[in-house]
Length: 367
Ligand code: MRU
Image 1 (tube, rainbow, N blue to C red):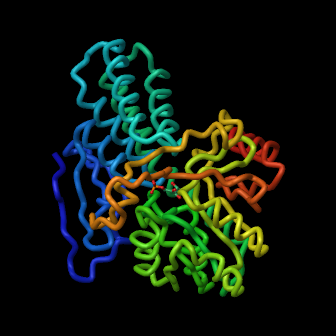
Image 2 (tube, helix red, strand yellow):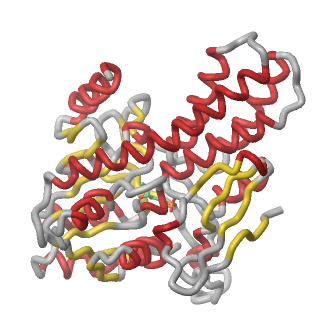
Image 3 (cartoon, helix red, strand yellow):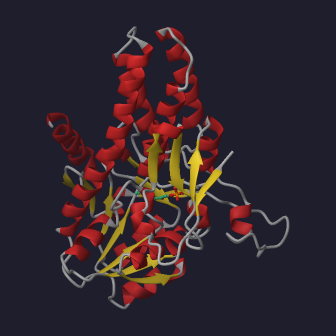
């Protein structure tokens, strides 16, 4: 059961809340229920495997890095509550729970990346005392969370070198603080720039069908005092043609080895339009979202979501004829040729990506 922890108070600011955090004492993950934003800030506690799975599937917690953090905390909590006393039974239960959580959403690689990392810690201590392993799992989950904050900040620093004060920046979907542990990926340069007085002018695509841009990006940027203008998805060409956009910054759910990038549906349209208007498109990508085992975008599994997300508004008011055929892919792949750079925590990868992404991973290994 989902427990409502807290309701929005007067003058409450979304930026003061953690997107995801661990409440170890109460065996819970506390998340902001993002389906309720921007109307009310509601924190909910997730305790069971089903609650965690549902929260990810229903986008109560969403965005590639945040899903990874939630899964890491989740698998730790489930393992912690295991009554198994021998390693083999503990391992068997862990793998079952891991596979279940991993099945919640297929496109964002951070989900399996975080769960595999947790499994790696478990197996590095094969045969050891189960209660000690639980401690190692907690430490790893907390590290995944903390690392996400450091990584986003680094992406922000590199991203900031690509723009100048007063620039117009367009973004699609929400790759903001609500999609990560802090700063966001695509919003990190914006937040860091704001601290330095850069005063960017941000255009947030509303991002149909689930309106992450309108409900989440516009909300968090506005709450932080950033100059943000909400536009409908079909307006990006107009703002680019008017010369109001100097760069596009977007997040990603999976980057293939050749640089092809899956992100929220509509990103590839923005990228194609941006190419026409000579606006550079930068993908902000923690290395946890780069999947060198996926050769090209054609190999990325694109999640299909329920038709109701298209036929009914977010607020459940029908706006399409009953029974109409619907196509509702949650993500699309932007061809690497449309991407000016992939901004990671280890620097900015440029074409040819097959080589530059390898270099980024070499840097990561050397760390
Ligand atoms: O379906 P969502 O809301 O989880 O989609 C999120 C996105 O597409 C984000 O741009 C991506 O996960 C990057 S978040 C830093």
